Length: 187
Image 1 (cartoon, rainbow, N blue to C red):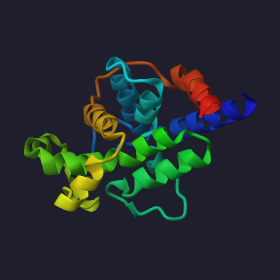
Image 2: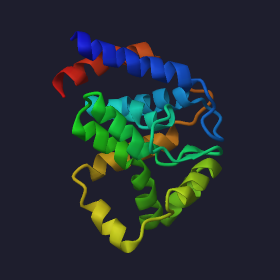
Image 3: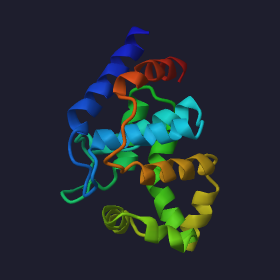
Image 4: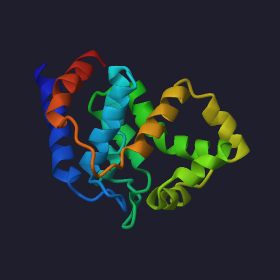
């Protein structure tokens, strides 16, 4: 319990410290974006692991570690991979890390398979799409579609796109501390 609480507090502190920063061309902060995304997951009755993945999907933007590819306009281009590695190193489950690690490819998948999806992206999200490789190729589509967590990666992606409302008000980070601890103890 003590180790899990320490990690949960580390995650919360990281979100609080860096989370007030602007979310790359959007009308919300990084923290507001994370909280909205988790809230959307809860509203959709997602399981606790998926709710936490929604909360933590952009954690890779919040730290600098060796291997980060940073672009000052859009943050850490490989934030999905870096976030997944960071979470695994702290004891989060492989499924949660896979969901975080797959949310960028979900955007690439959706833009390749649903042309109307591209029109719904914000200008900042369209810019990051290009830096992240653009819509997937046919070969990449087949590989990605075989992911065991495909459905939940796509759900997470939709909440990610919805979580940009500057007027949104909802639960704060403290609401997620017990959920973080519970997850870390069972991972």
